[in-house]
Image (cartoon, rainbow, N blue to C red):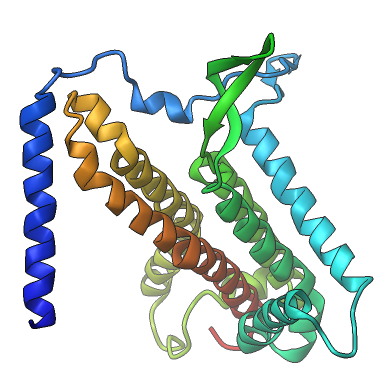
Length: 302
């Protein structure tokens, strides 16, 4: 029997099972009590307000602290246990180090800039990577739905990523945006830096034309605030939404239990995809674009 035939038979049996379960369990109707958006709701665990500023400790803050702690602890732990013959953990860290040092920083900045800004770029990469990875691991952080164990009230398991909250990628992007502009001004001077935004070959263009192109370049610089932050936010948020709905949220929302048979395997596929590819890829893209912006701000040409 050909592989194609086996696949078709498997899919047919899979769909037939869903139909049979749908007939048996039927449709309970739309579930109005289930609110998917509440999965991203941030309840204050420890309310802290200073003036009009809300500094409360919530789930997003917990994940940020967790990612920060993992980033620091991992690198300190490895740096103190480096061996001449590395084990698997050290080998993986050395590969990640070489990726950030050579491929990200070294390929997009000159040698002196790469040496100076490598710690910043590497920290961004590892912090975002840890934030993305732990965001797909079920942790007891859901305080909206609680369970009682031996008299103790405990939060239920949930997945949440700080990078799925647009404020976190935007804050990281602001740090990057300010850093490369300040570095460009320090390297070239205030007016020469902004003059470098104009591409070469415009020496004979009239001032009005130069001003028009400068405005376009300025808009593109500010647009990086949106493109860099939204790219990370949208990809991680989309991954969590897919897992939420494919893992049973859609079946609960529609009141169709049999639908879970079809969607749950897809949830497992998306989980593997997010953990194995998207989480690392988004950290790599963010760090690489940061290195490109830093290199471009200090380069002699446009």
